[in-house]
Image 1 (spheres, chains in turn orange, purple):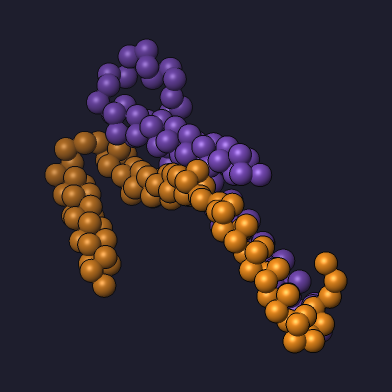
Image 2 (cartoon, one colour):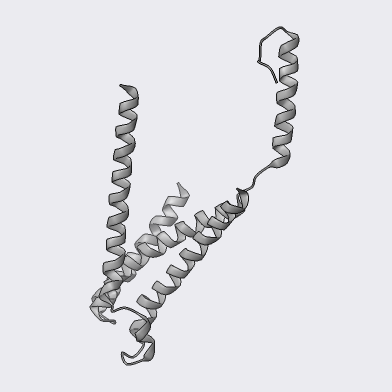
Length: 89
Length: 80
């Protein structure tokens, strides 16, 4: 809930800034009109950057895999003792 | 496999940062540079700053729609 308030505040501030630029016409119109597209592109770039960083930092857990294999062997042993068919290997 | 994932991640990061830098230069900084400056030779005219993103976004949305349609068709076929 708090996060969305922050995002909305930022959005409103950006829109107010943009409308102010449009009204005062400090810059030529054609440049001011580019601002929303610029923000959209920035958002897209931010998303792409986050995906890239997440891919780089993605952790694989080899030690957990070994532990899981141990667990599987243990469970198979246990079930075999109770007479449950768990297949060969 | 792990290395390939990392390479793809690095590629995505580099692409996004370079697009962001180029576009920032194009849209934010270039209006404040005189029109006869040599740096204008490295950028397309200002109209393209709108045209290219809009067309890219349209292409992305269309491809997404086509993909979703294909997936829906496939899942329906599986059910029947």
